[in-house]
Structures are given as C-alpha cells and as structure tokens.
Length: 244
Ligand code: ATP
Image 1 (cartoon, helix red, strand yellow):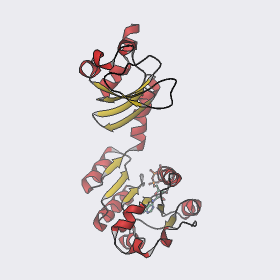
Image 2: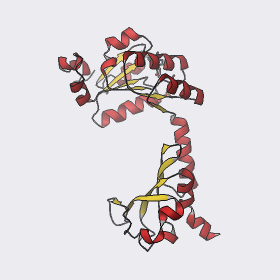
Image 3: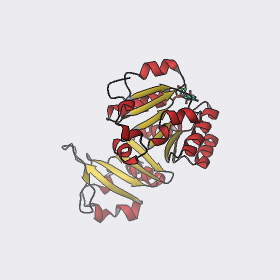
Image 4: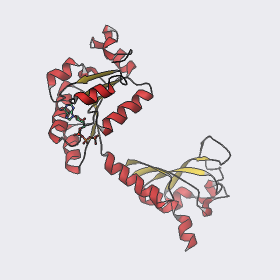
C-alpha cells in the first residue's frame, strides 16, 4: 500500500457523509486483470485514487505499490464489500469478464448495497444484456468496441473514432475536397451530408477550434465530425467517390 492510502483518509470518508467522498472521487476497480489493471493504472496516472480489488493474491501484490488501496477479496461476498467500504464509493467498475457468475453476482451485490454508478465489462451480448437488466449504468464491451474502432481506422479515412451510441459517433478525419476552401455554411454540410463539423485544427496550429458556419476548411486541416456512423463514414469517404 502506498502513502496515499485510501484507508488513511479522514474519518468523514467512512462516516456515511457522501460529500467528502464525492469530492474525493475515489473509484473502485473490481478485477485487476488486463482490462481492470490498465484502467486502474490510467486512473491513477490521472490523479484518481483507485481501490483495487481482486481475488488473486499475485495481482494484489503486483498493484499494491501503484494503487491508493488494494485488497485481496471475493467481490461476490456482500459482507466483504461492505467491510471495504465499497458501498460508499461513488463509482465502481466491475472488470471481471470470463467468470460470468462472479461478474453478475458482484453487480447484483453492488446494486443491493446501493451503488448507483456501476461500469461493468461484458464479454458477450447476453452478458451485457444481463448486466443492463440488473441495472448496471454503463456496460462496456472492450473487445467489441475496439474492433469497431479499429475497423474504421484500418480503412484509412478516419484517424480516430469514438462511438457515443449505436446511432451517433465522433470521428477525426480530414475535409473532403468538395467541402474545402469555402465557408462551411455555403456547403451546407449538415443538410447535404447529415454530419456536423464539430471542430477543426489547422496544420500549423496545435489547437482545436469550434467549427462555426463561417469557418473555411482547407485540405490539410484535421476535422472532428459528429453524426450517424453511416453518414460519418460516407462523408469521410467523399474523396474516394471523386477518385472513381
Ligand atoms: P482480462 O481483463 O484480463 O481480459 P477477463 O475478461 O478474462 O480479464 P476474468 O479473468 O474473468 O476476466 O477476471 C478479471 C479479474 O477479475 C481476474 O484478475 C480475476 O482474478 C478477478 N476476479 C474474478 N472473480 C473475482 C471475484 N469473485 N472477486 C474478485 N476478483 C475476481
């Protein structure tokens, strides 16, 4: 355990008063496998106190010096979760995938304990459905999401791709020739192509600017566009159509 131990927080942290906890913003990560472990490290790198829980002693030893607090525990045990004060933590991540039973039981115990903001990893559609039905706020499918993202990146026109929902994405790309060199409003990007140019970055700048209607895009700009995945994709491939 390192110096900024979660257990060493002031008593108010444990006293059931949510304000110091919310202000503090500790996150519990249950399961320190590849996904949970890298998430816990990333959160820690951004200054978030992470309470890492895993049933595997070796993993607990591996993370003991890196995270604010670690505990070797079975997360399906309600008494243990209570003992660790997980019920008082505002945000909890269940990073257990392959062990379906452990994942589902942990989610149900957390919900029973009153945890409201639960992120849970699922490894299949039925797994995701059960977690949703139980009431997990956010269910992520890292392999799936990464696959979708990678498919767009590999195809070449999009350099970053962030699915917000099934019907809405953000993508980083370059302006197609036919929308460049004239103000955005005169092209009617939104009405004609069904996407919104949210922001743009000039080649010579390191900053992003908002994509106002009077902005003129140039071929060597980078742009951030938002819309339905199909429209975003079609827009990013407009130059390809011109080539044919
Ligand atoms: P990865 O993130 O490595 O791909 P995975 O999806 O294969 O993991 P699991 O191996 O099922 O998921 O679980 C991830 C971690 O959760 C493991 O380190 C495992 O020890 C831990 N874990 C599994 N069950 C429990 C439990 N009941 N209580 C606490 N930790 C658990």
